[in-house]
Length: 225
Length: 225
DNA sequence: CAGACACTTATTGTATGCAATCGGTGTCTG
DNA sequence: CAGACACCGATTGCATACAATAAGTGTCTG
Image 1 (cartoon, chains in turn blue, cyan, orange, purple):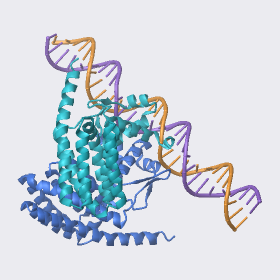
Image 2 (cartoon, rainbow over the protein chains, first blue to last red; image 1 turned 90 degrees about the horizontal axis):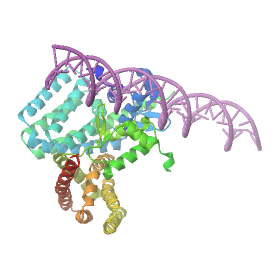
Image 3 (cartoon, chains in turn blue, green, brown, cyan; image 1 turned 90 degrees about the vertical axis):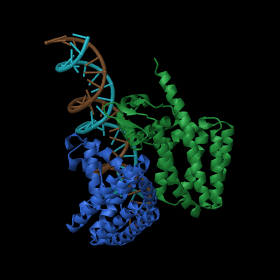
Image 4 (cartoon, chains in turn purple, green, brown, orange; image 1 turned 45 degrees about the horizontal axis):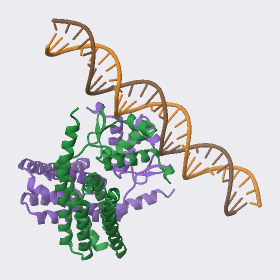
């Protein structure tokens, strides 16, 4: 199955994974040749993958100097998470009217799986299930456009949400929010959905401010030589 | 100034223009070689431009058969315009709190210019001013994320909005909606903004259903030989 | 020593050729 | 005549070579 993927897509997936997982830290500079050499492919597919990631805002293109993996500023993180929340609110409220019993069951399963993943400290799995939880609801909104927009914003936040999950206790907090959201959808209570989403987002941003502050200071000290 | 643009960007701009203006009708099949030859460039920049447009959903890639300029189905048009409206509502309501007198003046100017453009039957100018009207408000929302999302959805609708403007009388109707929206923003009346936006969007969709029906039947009769 | 200037080098931008793949077409066979 | 099969052409996918450009570097000069 994997063999049928184009090189461009393989490179794209590989780079995206490395950016999201934090393997490429903020400030990492990537050049076409460097990536082409390390993945043993020509520049062509690499170039196309980089352009795609740049369009998705996961990379920044620096003319004649390659591509940069950047972290957002605090205010940009706040903007991103708040906007995402506002748009998710629309999708979630649309979802209330359309979601099926099957989909609700899938959500419930997701919560159980997340609980297990947290217990076994499988952080990647936790992030993956986090993405899935939101995506199930996006789908239930029954709108191609909203799905696409939400998915795109989700991608932009994944890197940061993953970092949250690396901090002990925070995945549990996030899970509790998911449970509340799930119950609110079950109860078809738009107000409660809205409030739970807001809390989920606000808490994420607050915790991220701390995490980013620490990250930046670490990076600063590493540069001291 | 134009000389400094990369070929990729020139090709991209040119193709986008042709798609939006309707020069490439739905069903038009584009191949890398065809475009490369007609613009006298190599396949490389063409390829990259096509990929970008595909990512923006302005084109559909058909494996081993090129790229297709497609029109959305009625239900997809409805979904697109409704979702755009819902997200614009957020941006517009955020804008109320931040918009400056200067920006309001620019909006007012825009309405005047539109009136003139309609009178002189400059359809492209009307569409351009339509885009600008919305964009001014996106900016006033003071959110990079919302701006990006709204702009993207705007791009997806431009082709259809332009078609509306080609029908006599409809640009006038649209202008009236803009005036109402402008007044609602001036009055900081969120409810009125919301209603005006909804009407603006709903009317567009209704008119588009007619237009698309006619377009499809024309296309059908043309195929009869 | 400071500033400008030329040179080198790293990097992206573009062209081109070849490989792989898929669809269509025509032919062969039962 | 129908169905399978092989071949051909069109198209994208990828690799590679070359061009253009800009940034950095070292040197020369006042």
